[in-house]
Picture 1 (cartoon, helix red, strand yellow):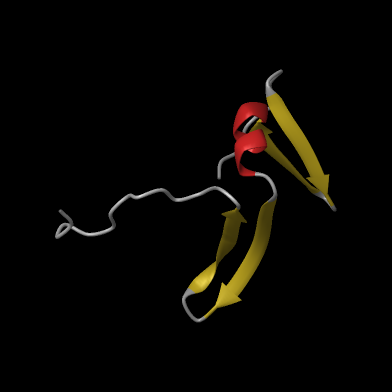
Picture 2 (tube, rainbow, N blue to C red):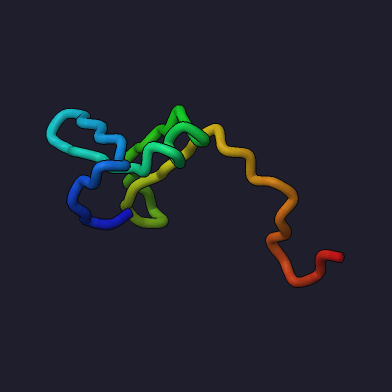
Length: 64
């Protein structure tokens, strides 16, 4: 997440007092998107989830 100004190819979503921007093409691939603010012992911040498939990527160095 970052601060940005809206562009022509952005989807603009307003929720309460927060405005979210996402490129329209990316939004069409991942919608719906769920954004939560979490406050836990691990820290505070935003949690972003979507229906985007994660693919067959590997998360460790031992993959073959």
